[in-house]
Image 1 (cartoon, helix red, strand yellow):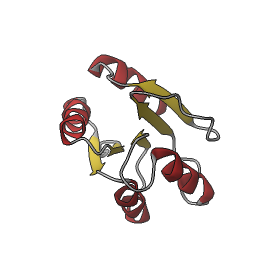
Image 2: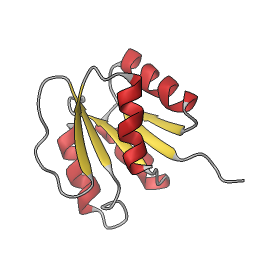
Image 3: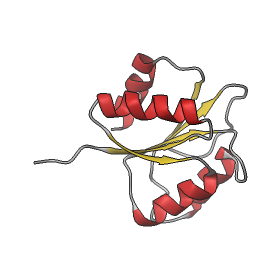
Length: 117
């Protein structure tokens, strides 16, 4: 039996993170959760998700900083990253990146996820 695709959801707002987890799990995905850039990078040391949903505004390392580190690591550089932002458009961070504005409807989020997973 094939396991569910794994998505790393990185969001510092507990309610927004819970909503992401519920939406993704309901759609059949396995979800790793991180509330900071540092937590996200630590998760990527032991896991290899199919997609990273990455909030731009995080405590400590920003989403942009996390993405740069993902792209600089030969093991993770090909991971698709979808930036989530309520206020700003993400700069180009290399291949396999996309940007969506928050708040995002669950149906729109799942459309974007299906582009990569």
